[in-house]
Amino acid sequence: MFDLQGKRVVITGAAGGLGRAFAHGFSDAGASVLAADLDLAGAKETMTNRPGGAIALDVRDMESCTRCIAAAIDTLGGVDVLVNNAAIYAGLTRAPFDEITSDMWDQVQAVNVKGTWQMCKAATPALRAAGGGAIIQIGSATVSSGSPNWMHYVASKGAIHAMTRVMARELGADAIRVNTLAPGVTMTEASLDHFDNARSYGAANAALRRNADPQDIIGAGLFLASAAAAFVTGQTLTVDGGKVFS
Image (cartoon, rainbow, N blue to C red; front, top):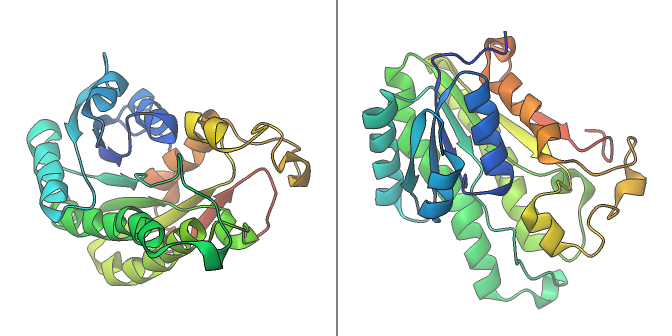
């Protein structure tokens, strides 16, 4: 039931980190993948010797989102799954909420919230044309835990969780399922750069006593994209080793 043979998948933010892990995991499960990222060279590297392609994408620009989906139709023949992974995370300045500047706030929301919404808008006609499919939003377990000094990021991910529920209601009649996958701290390059002692950061609060590696997250994404989740929509699947129970 986790076989994605023949599925056509668009993954944003796929030049590295969790996006690259998703691209490889979906490809290994039989899907054809279009890796999309502002870093085109990184997206191309992700897809080396794998079926599909790569495209430059700026999710802040609606025309860029539309071109991405058009490229997926040309390259893959259509779209069955959209994974909205692109987000500002690496290098994000942490600060108390009353010290976050308007520019910091707007930068995060433009990518994490508006960019996700625009990709959903761009992809929905193609998903409808395919007779249905799946949108997987990459949220964050921080929405449940309320990570301090990070309100701009946590708020952006909370918006994605809320958007998922609205779109699940609006797109259900089109057989398009919309779910949020909410990872905890995951040992990508971004996390290793972002946190001091990243591997131990918060791990003591997890039931499994460790933080995730990207491979720990892939299975949940494959599930949400597959026939195994055919009756699952509007849900948040938290994959954080048991730090929060939601």
